[in-house]
Length: 184
Picture 1 (tube, one colour):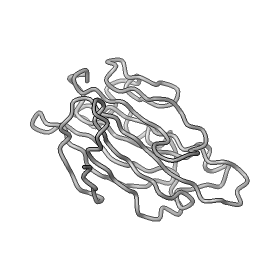
Picture 2 (cartoon, helix red, strand yellow):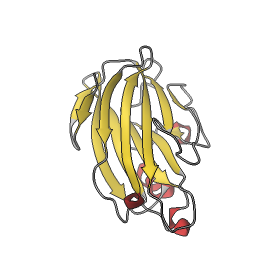
Picture 3 (tube, rainbow, N blue to C red):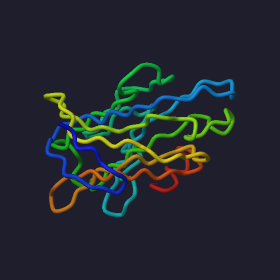
Picture 4 (cartoon, rainbow, N blue to C red):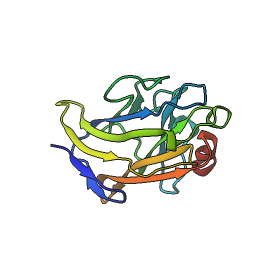
């Protein structure tokens, strides 16, 4: 049974191979455009910066060079139940320089489409065992991000040779480029 986390809570990840599932629903809006939310992963070193550009995994770079992080692909609409996007993680392959894996969701072209996370509901991030499919951790985003167009859902970090997950839930008015500026 999955452990349901609250913002700021931390929990050990006891599976070397797991999948991050991200899901959301969008409110019907008068913006006239469909929503395209994008999951991205930043693999950081000790200095809290990308190890190298190739360690930024997103819809245009689906795999890290060490093959430890693989994005299953971009869901352009978020339609349907369950996970809208998935990221497969194999910590046994992770580059030894990696100390943190940040998971971010942004709204593609949010400014032009007049969209924000206040129009998104039922947002969640879950971590499940890649072998058994059993849910390990789940974090449901409960805040109303009425002006934010990007949210850092959580981070997986290494401390004392153990990998843990922290539920972050921090919004940002900006997009993918703003996170690239932060972590590059």
